[in-house]
Length: 168
Image 1: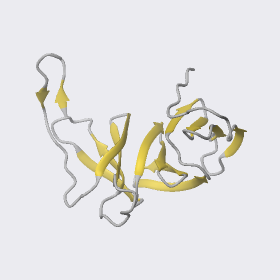
Image 2: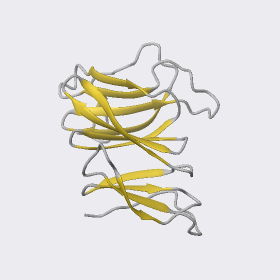
Image 3: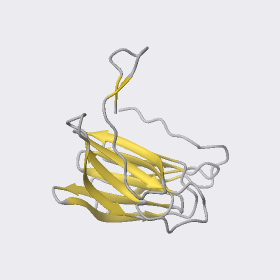
Image 4: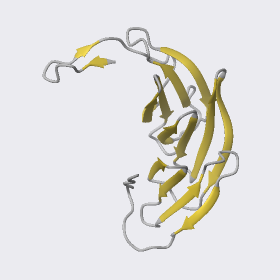
């Protein structure tokens, strides 16, 4: 954790390290003092490293970051977005895992399966926007995290969709 109050001279305040992890941070998001981190493997063929998954780290005390939750979702986690106590994790194999942050930790709620590789993920106003690079976009209503509903399926579009920008 860095203090960037002087952007020309950032100062390290503290550090959080997950012992035994051979994974890479591939996605992160911050909400209400909790830093959600998607650890995964950058190698397509490796799915067995320990400590690959979703970590929740309380950083409200920046001098003492503390792990407060973990869900083992071994494999190639790529991106993570949050909304309140909802956490969405994009996997390289075409799926998105949805979790709820409960006081005791991350609880899996649902999985959105896909047929195309997912390249970007955004949340806005109860909807989850998914970019499928060469294949188009899909949009899900996730206002009920247990039963996501497909509302727009634009797969098969021509063009490149590596990222999504969503405005309110």
